[in-house]
Image (tube, rainbow, N blue to C red):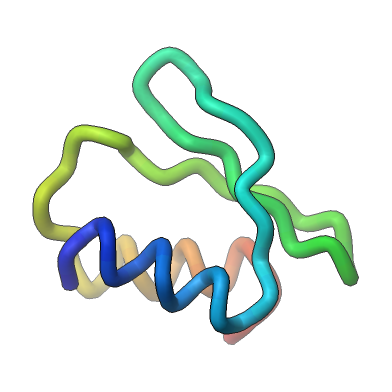
Length: 60
């Protein structure tokens, strides 16, 4: 999955972009307060990383 597709998916699920880090973007699930980091410069997000991001935000 491309990083842009992941960001679209997170917005669709209800996650909100919080801020830019040095090399990562910080996303938050406003309902639970769970946070995760997404590497800003990746073109493709591996399946395992995608699953961990969704788990970190409480969507899986």
